[in-house]
Image 1 (tube, rainbow, N blue to C red):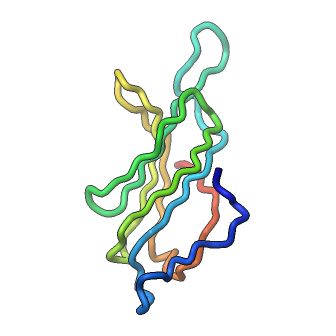
Image 2: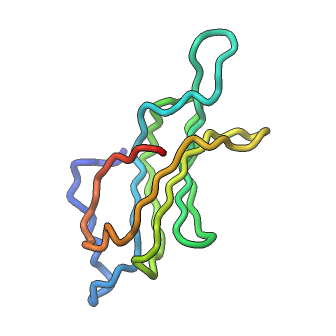
Length: 128
């Protein structure tokens, strides 16, 4: 498990000039996500959520799939090399479906210009 009370990561290591060079992402959890897989035998249903992070062109990183969950807990860490603060991190949640292809659930974006202070940000984001 990820210790959310831990002190912030030191993101200035490795670059004495203080330039932005690596983005660290910690995907912890989600709540209140949409039911995408309806249960035919009873009311309700579930989803098989996964997150994909896009930074710039074709570069992307994917989380694991959390089967049958409307409140998934990932506790997964990701790193992106960063060459420009003009880039935008796009975070997409899909419902994983092996046979028919994934179903879009929502997304949000974070301009890297908002995180150039090299401080850890802990924040909830709403899917659009």
